[in-house]
Length: 224
Image (cartoon, rainbow, N blue to C red; front, side):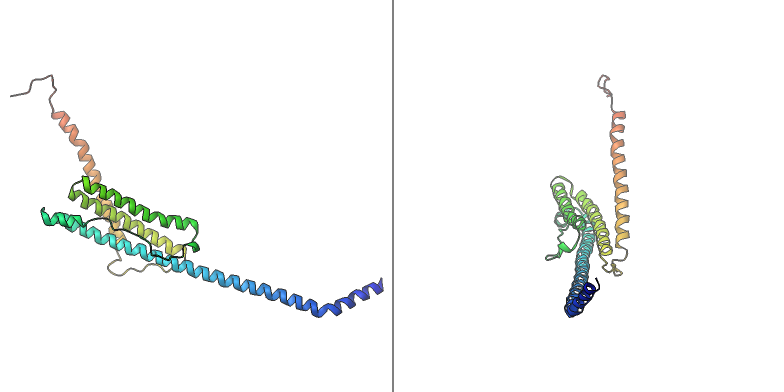
C-alpha cells in the first residue's frame, strides 16, 4: 500500500510541468473567451445605442416636418377662395416617411423592431386616406384633416423616439428653443380639434331633429 502511494506521488511530480502547462492553457483560453465576450457585448451595446439614436433622430425630424405641414395647411385654408388658394391646397398633404438606409436592425430585439416598423405603415395608411378624401371632400375640410392627422403622427413620432432613446441608453432629446414646446402644442391642437369635431357632430345630429319637428305631415294640407 505504501509503495503504491509512493509511485502515485512520483508520477504526479514527474507530470507536474505538463499539468501546469495544460492548466495554464485552459485558464488562458477562459480569460480570452471572457474578454472576447465582454468586447462583443460592449460593441453590441454601442451598435444598439447608435441605431436607436439614428431612429430617434429620423422620427423627431419627421415630427418637425409634420408641424411645418400643419402651418402650411392653415395658411392654405386662410387664403381667399380662388385659383391661388386651390393651388396652395394642392400642395397640402401628409409628408412621406422612411427610416434611414443601412440601419443595424438585427441589434434590436424583435418587439422593438416590430413597433418601429409599424410607424411607416401608419403614415402610409394616413396618406392614402387623405388622398382619397382629396378626391371627394371639400378643399377646406382637407386642410383641417391634414392638420389633424399631421398632429397625431407627429405626437406619435415623438413618443416613439423618446421610448427608443430610453430603451437603448441613447442621450435624451434636447430640443432647441423652437421645438421646446412642440409636443405640448401638438397635444393642445389635437384636444382642440377633437372638441370642435365633437361639437360639429352634435350640431349635425340636432339638425335633422329640428327639420323633422318643423316639417308638416303629408296628410295635412300645406298652408298657402
